[in-house]
Length: 110
View 1 (tube, rainbow, N blue to C red):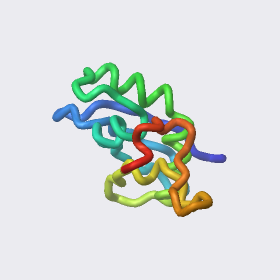
View 2: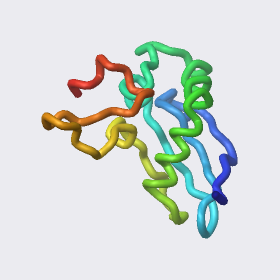
View 3: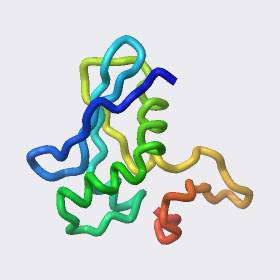
View 4: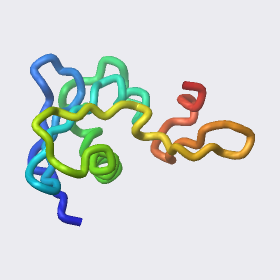
């Protein structure tokens, strides 16, 4: 699809993962905060930097897909991904929001 992960790292404050992806017209930097990793991918609250990065790579395909949907053309700023970026926008039947299979069931009330 023309996009590729260039690098991923933990920022100095240990808040999530910062990564750069090759997109249309250049490179785009993204940030997925620790809270989004906790809520969308069940990261333990006091997980180490290494565990944050490990979880990022475990869900890399989904994270990169959502990143590309949010910012397909390169810009100068860092684009933040939030928990809501990992839920579907489709309403399921009785008015409940359907979540992607990677999201833990206990998070459905968020």
